[in-house]
Image 1: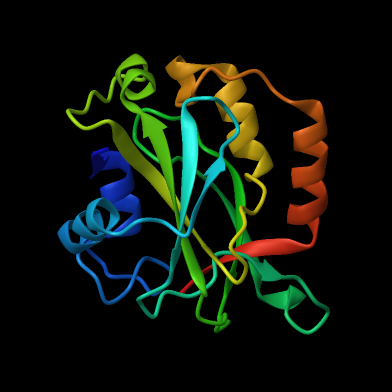
Image 2: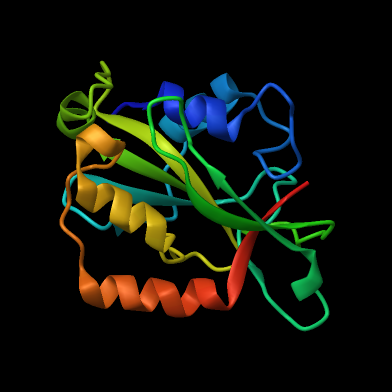
Length: 185
């Protein structure tokens, strides 16, 4: 099985500005090589048949993706309308500024199969392409952000995957993300 970083993931996980909320202490090429050379601790099924998550112990100083919202940090939440690329429509996002989350225990690269990536206009030569990565305390997936679920349901034309909305998974994600937020350094 071969794995590559998609251009989308490369720019988000290894940005030029080296922001502290991205993957730390590892180049994009080293990350890709490690995923190809090291067996994951386990493989999780993703939200669709073409999606898998590989669970790896964190070998970097990368910090957790999601942080619980508390009365002590609620004032540090920020929001804005943003697009992940120039082709996508901006959506409302929120994040923390000015916090220092714990170092993640696990890295969970999110993989899409070659056929799905071709369908989305991002063909790869490898079997799997990394489209994102979760940084977690437990070796389990955290729920997808609800707006990503909605974007996926809108289809490939709107930057999604074309997978219909799962109302139960959506409600579970809302419950999680009402109590958590991502962060930016």
